[in-house]
Amino acid sequence: MTAVAQKTVLSVSELNRQARITIEERFQQVWVMGEMSNFVKPRSGHWYFSLKDEQAQVRCAMFVNRNRAVRMQPGDGQLVMVRGRVSLYEGRGEFQVIVDHMEPAGAGALRQAYDQLKAKLADEGLFDATRKRPLPRYPRRCVVVTSPTGAAFKDVLAVWQRRYPALEVVLVPSAVQGADAEAQLIEAIARAGKIPADVLLLTRGGGSLEDLWSFNLEGVARALAACPLPSVCAVGHEIDVSICDFVADVRAPTPSAAAELIVPDARHLMAQFGALQRDLINTWQRLHQLLQLTVRNLSLQVASPRTVLEQASQRLDDLSGRLQRRQQHRLEVLVLKLTALNRQLRAHGPTERLQATSDQLAQLKLRLRATATSGLERQQQRLETLSRMLHGVSPLPTLARGYALVTDAEGEVVSDTRELSTGDVIKTYFNEGAITSRVADVDPNASLENRKST
Image (cartoon, rainbow, N blue to C red):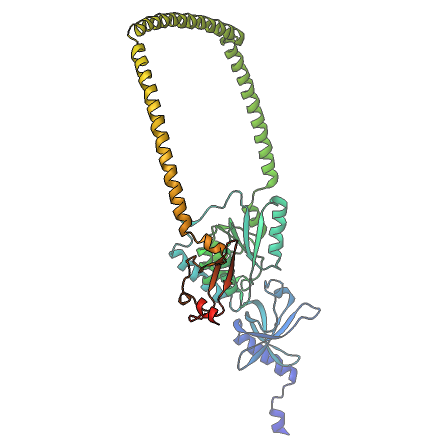
C-alpha cells in the first residue's frame, strides 16, 4: 500500500493539459506545408482540416477571426502552406496545429518563376517601348482570344456595342486556365495573327495567381510578341499584372477598359462629325459668296455679248466686201489673159493639117474595110472545109447507126476489155443520152465476129 501511495497518478485531463503546455512551449510558431484533406466548415465559421504528405498527417484548426483574412478558397486536394502554433486538443487528446495564416504553397515558387521570366524577357528587349506599335484610330476588325463562355468576352462585346457598333469582332476561342491553356493560347494567338484584322485583344477575367498563370508562361508571351497585329492585353483585375501585359503593345487594367481603348466613342465621333459638317457648310457659304462677288466684278470688266457680236458682224461684212472686190479684179485679169491666148491660138491653129489628116484617114478606112471583107470570106471557106473533115471523123454518125462510146470512171475512152476489171464503173454514150453501169463480167475473147457466127 505504501509503494502504491508514493506513485504519481494523473487523470486523463491533467495528462492532456500538461502535454499541451509542453508542446506549446516547444513549438511556439511553425510553418507547415502539405495537402489539405477532410476540410470542414461548421456553422461557427471555423475551419477544420488535415494536412498530409506521403507518410503522415496532422489535424489543423483555423478559427473564424483568422480565416476571414485568407484570400484563397480552401478545399480538399490543395497544396497549402500554413503558419501557426502546435497544440493539443485536450478534449480528445488530439495533436493539432492552430493556424493563423494560410497561403497556396506554390505562390512563392510562382512568384519567383514570374520574376525570373520577367527579367529574362526584359533583357531580350521584348518589353522595350521602341517595339510597341500604336493602335489603329478607327479599327474595322478586332480579333479576340479568350474563353467564349467567360464574363470578359461578354463585357467587351457590351462596351463595343455601346461605343462602336461598326466594329467587326472575330473570336478565336481558347482555354484561359488549366493544363490545356498554354497550348491552346499559343495556337489561338498564331491563328489570330493570320486573320486580316486591325488589332488583337488577349483577355480574361480575374482570379487567383494560379488561375492567371497561363498568361505568365514563356510560350504564350513569345507567341504574343511574334503576332503581327497590334495587341492589347487585359488579364484579371487592375492589380493583376501578367507577363503578357508587358509584352503586349498596350496593357489595359480590365477587359472593359481594353474595349474602350481599342475603339473610339461613336457619340464623340458623331459630335466631331457634326462640328466638321457645320464648319464645312460655313466655309462653303463664304466661298460661294466670294465667288459670286468675283463673278460680278469680272462681268463689269467684260463687254456685253451683244456688243461683241455686233462688232464681229461689222468686221465680217467689211472683210467679205474686200474679198469680193479682190476676186472680181482677179477674174477680170484672167478674162483678158484668156482672150489674148485665144487670138494667139487661132493665129497658129492646126486647122489645115487636121483637114488633110482627116482625108487620109477616110481612105485608110476604105482600104481596111475591103481587106477585112476579103480575109473574112477566106476564113469562112476554110471553116466550112474543116467542118466537113471533122464530120467525117466524128463518132456521132457512127453512134446514130446504133453503136455506143464507152468511158471509164476518169472519162477515158475504153477500146479494149483488158482496160476494165470486174466492179469498175463505166459510162456508155448513145446517140441520144448516156448510162452509167458497173462491170459484172469481162470476157476478153468475145467479139462481134464470134457473135455473128454463133
